[in-house]
Length: 302
Image: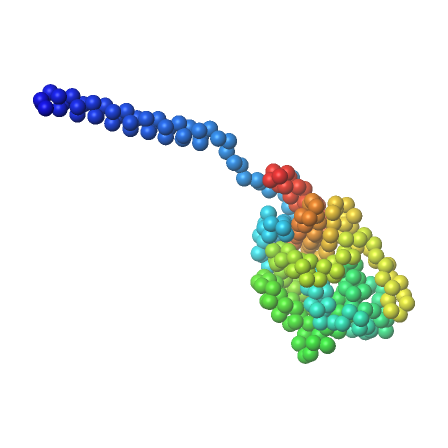
């Protein structure tokens, strides 16, 4: 083969090679353009219309097992009467539901008068309802005292703390069964918004009947002594929350206003909302704000 022929072949090979590479580059560029032209996937945002008064808050989707929103979720704060959620849960694990509890003078020592009287006889489920719906300190004391007596020498606070540890509620600690402040600087219990949500999830899974009456605005409880007691729910907004499943309030000087609710955002979609460290009135608007925020979030993912 002559030198000129070899040069021609080499030249043609280079041309075809360049064209081949160019074709690949054009194809890659076309594919990249197609990717860039695809609509961007915007992650859903959880937005609230108003600034929260609460120091800490969470929105927990039980089905997704996901905290959709959190504000200082693990900050330990005074629990106030949200304590009674653990009081009710632990006491009902220990006590026989058909064994009467007789109200003692000691049970009536905490502040607040629920109308219970010395010597009056109740069953644990009745006292549980009164403690959770009316946030009765007397009923909580009666449950705690009876459970600790039956359990042995440990104080009820110690029993509650052991349960909190077993549930891995790492920011929760109990001194008493009511959540009442023990001094001007020390709360009767401490917890976090995340811990309360996880505790409520546990109660819904293992003892949902404990919370059943807390969805009602008003209840009547007839003691085994024959006296009928009428109580209003301390959550004054309970009737206005669509799909409400459970509710519990808390209010002390150190805690400010606390509120936890469970509601169905849709069929089979229970959601837990917790607000801690708000104000007496602000806790209700905070929870409404968070509920509205979740509905907006839900609209984005459906």
